[in-house]
Structures are given as structure tokens and as C-alpha cells.
Length: 395
Image 1 (tube, one colour):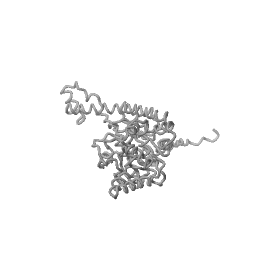
Image 2 (cartoon, helix red, strand yellow; image 1 turned 135 degrees about the vertical axis):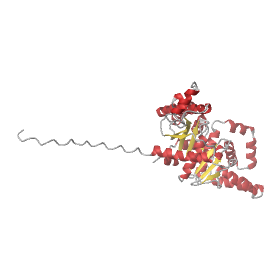
Image 3 (spheres, one colour; image 1 turned 60 degrees about the vertical axis):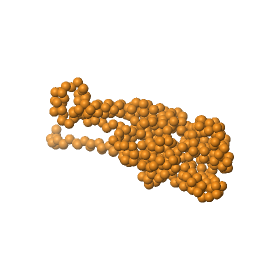
Image 4 (cartoon, one colour; image 1 turned 90 degrees about the vertical axis):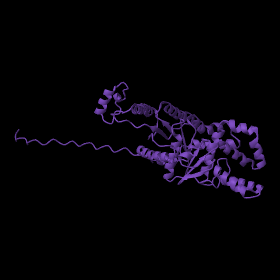
């Protein structure tokens, strides 16, 4: 099985990495790639800036699940909203749920309880995935019946259908009720590196502390889900620079020690292209060359020697960045264990054009590392030396 097909078999792909390395762009491109391969994919983000919507040319949705292409949806998740919905579902009585949600104790609990927001994110993803078979939601309740019952009951109390369309359907699209799509896979644009590890470790840690009640049951179920290497995968995004590479290697070690697993893929994003050998020559960047020397250099290498100080500065920057890229790529080759693909720096604005271009390059890179190595050439059969003249009789 090639690597792209392997990634498509997961139910949850957690895309993480240092902030600023293009993690969201890679998550959006990966979602498009897997949707194009026939999977029904939701790209889920938790950043309130809704960057995924920009990458996929979708208007900000206020937290609803919205289509972004064939077999592709996007959602900006607000973990607090998920926790509030759990309270409403458990209490059932609207007056009680309002009092709990407005209480200072709940406010402090939802804001400060370790691991609670992480459970909300992962539990939401699992609940959406559960709709494929109609099995119970991640909180132990039926995912569809709870949403429809809550919406309809509140609607009857309000005395009309307006409440149902506004509250029931909109909340269904948030929570994974009847208005939500059936999904094969969730691509989670996870928080930055350290927070990404905490996200994956939270279910196991919470399940060891809280063993009873709805949150204990949820934590135990999510711990099994995240620990299952056939259901949950991790994609790490980095750039070939010192600090992002350092964090990627630390993440690899943290996943091994805390969760006993390795990432499925490392994406090295934003690589500067290599310079041609002539442009790499140090003398063409020499700021001490006088005008006559520059004229001689330009005559010897037409079109290669910078014409202006600005051009020389740009080439110097390019050369320096490529040098750093090559140094860090060498470090990754030594210390990273597992598949690795490289994506170039593209002169495109953030948006669907960049996402489509990265999708094409990601598909090609995955195919290249998945392809079997070319067969070795057959060894040459030595040509026997020409036969000499027959020996004379009696010799």
C-alpha cells in the first residue's frame, strides 16, 4: 500500500508542527488530496482566526460545518461550545442547563481543568465519525437522537418551528447531528507542537485520573481511539530551519516516550530552490568588487552577475536560505525516523491557488517515496575471449 492510500485509511489525521511553518496550508492541501482520492473528509481547525477557510475559499462560518468542495468540508471548532453542548445534553432541562452554564464554578472548570478542551476537540471528531454507522456518540449517547430530541423539545417549549431551524439544525451542524455530513476521515489542524503533544496525551492522562462519570468514560474511549495506530495518525510539518527542525525532532521523541508511537509523515515545507552552480559562485556576491571588476564579471557571465545592489542582496538572501535548508535537511536525514516529503516555497498568496499547488506537489512527493525503487540493472555477462588457433597435433 502506498503512503497516500495509507494516510487515507485513518479516521483521524492530526497535523501539527511549530507555528509559522505552513501547518494550516498543509492540512488544507492534505484534506483536498484525500477527498480527491474518494474519501469524505472534514478539515477541522481550532484557531479562532479561521485560516483553513481562507485556504479553501470558504467564508467564515461561525463554527458550522460547511462544504468546501466535492467530498470536502471545513469547520472551525470552538471547544468551549462543545463542552456547553455536553452540559445541555446531559441535563436535558433548559432552565438547569442555563444556570449551570452561567455559574462561576462551571466557568472556572471549563477554562482551567487540565485536558478538558483537548477531550472536547477529540470527542467532537470521534462523534462526527460515528455517524457513518449510527453507533453511539463519543459521550455514550446516540449522536442523532440526542441532537434531534434536544432541538425538538426546546422547539416545543418555545412554541414554534423557528426555534428548531435556528437552534436544532445549526447546532446539528456544529455537533454532528442529522444536518452534519457522514465522514470517513477528519484532518485536524492541531495546535502548535507542544500543544499538539498535549492534545494527543490528554485522553490517557485524564482517564488515569477520572475513571467514572461522563468525562471519565469519554477520556477512556478517546485514549483507545488515539492509541490505535490503525485509526489515528500524526503528520508533522516543519521547515528546514534550525528551530522548526529542533521542535520536530523533539516532537518525534515526545510521541515515542509519551505515547509509544511515531509520526506517519514529516512534511518539510517552504524549501528554497537550489541555485544553479554559476549563481552559487561566491565572487558574484562580493560587495568589494569595483565597477570595472563587475563589468568584467558580467561580460564573462552574461545574465548571471547582479546588475544592481538590490539584485545582489536578493541573491545573497536566497543563497543563505538555501544553505540553511541544506544543512537542516542533512540533520533530518540523520535523525528523523520515517517517511519525509519536501514542498517548495511558492510565490503565491495564501488562498485556494496555493492550496491547489501544494496539493499537486504533495501528491507527487507521496507517490515518489511510495514508488518501488527502480530495478537494478542486470550484471553484464562477460564476453568470452576469442578462441585461439587450434593446437598442433603432437604438441
